[in-house]
Length: 511
Image 1 (spheres, rainbow, N blue to C red):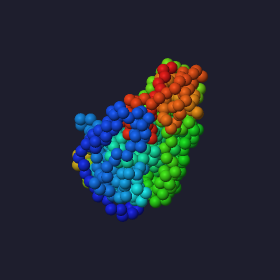
Image 2: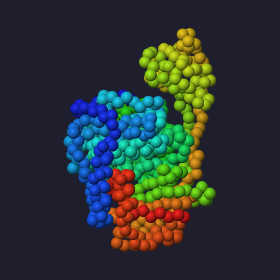
Image 3: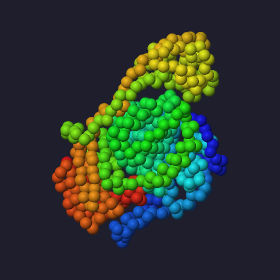
Image 4: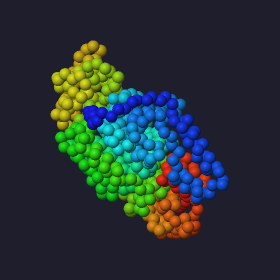
């Protein structure tokens, strides 16, 4: 990605080799002092937790701090936080999360100060006094794997123990794979976020890479502002437009823009970022939306705000309104089908491995550890130079590669395949769906292939002094008074660290 320095803010890089465990222990002890005090009533405890302000002044501001999330015994995922100079722990502060591209590498990207200092959003975070979180992902923690999603969620919750993050002003953006990851999280785990801003990403990547379904009708629940460019060799706007039209058919809350004359690059940053920041400021999270639609194939992606699908039953007949939104996408990308060796530091392109399946590389006879030095007789020293030559190629064209193999130069000949078509979404797993609405303490819910569901209640959402009525599939299943469930409320607060989404009661129904 081309780097663009917008301002010269002063930033220092602080490396921490530990996690936030000590701060977490401090936070938990402070919470326990209130929750274990039986003299504090449930209503008073709700007020205390929803107005929680136990945050310390950081040692420094205007700095970038590196933390680590210990995922398992062998995987320690880094993440970086930018603290703006005027950060004040007394005030709730918005948080912008930026997902990087190229998430399928073997190792985490090295954490370099220049990368963070020249991130396009840092000057705006400085100007508007926003915190910025940079998660780091790799092949084991990609943005569309459960481990990667949990990694980001854990980082948000850990930071909430130490910094006064505005629960209703957490935004996600990212470029390339980061844009595709923003799409995926908006369709699977949107609870923490106010809105999403995918940049030069592709909505289908999470489904196509994992072989699991994603549900674009879930985009009804959060605003998504997406951008693509016409000359992008990976995700051109003409292909993305087909999926965006599909999303609009599904009722997505979507704004889609494209820029002309730009490739897979963020050259539109100076023009677009001020617009994005203004949109973010005008779009706080609304967890009390009166109408929700949610669909999932697994309970791990089962919750959206006050609605949760706990268990599905694939033997049930799917309702007419639960649709599989699908379109055929042209695969006209020009790709050889090999992985380069990222650690190779000399001229040429070292082949680390070949992509599975029938590829141009395999048809040509390209092998692992071949050093590519020319394409169609034109010398090349890098992937960028190869991409420049590929830009003049179309599906069905012939191509040659000259490689060094065991100190011998070999020229390989092949042909790019003709254009093929593939499904935009992989519907490989049965799913359940719920469409629900509430108004004046009454919930009306319809389900499709759902065996068990739950609704979450909040004193700002319903009046606990009046009875709550729940109708599911035209049958009244609950009509009674509710009260704050202290144990559930505290457990929810400890797990999610969310003062706004302080759900005080959970009603669960088996159908």
